[in-house]
Amino acid sequence: MADAATDVRKLSFERAIEELESIVKRLEDGKVPLEESVAIYERGEALKRRCEELLRTAEARVDKITTDSSGEVTGTTPLDVE
Image (cartoon, rainbow, N blue to C red; front, side, top):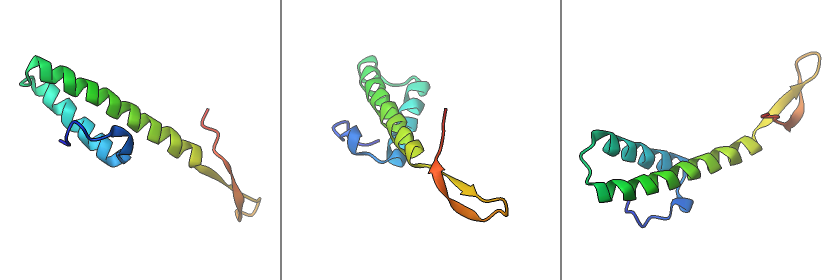
């Protein structure tokens, strides 16, 4: 797992989710002392928020491809995710 001082805001989605999965596994194993459990749980919450932020950003960038009646691509429009 990355050093606890690593700034979560600088992590890529892949790195954040990897670290979050590692934290979940450690907590599920139940072999982490209480004090450390609280600390890594807090970091896990920060990682979860980072992943959610990155996913929202990615969704905002996704475009829906538009086609004409013959199936030819005519452009893109913003994806309506509601």
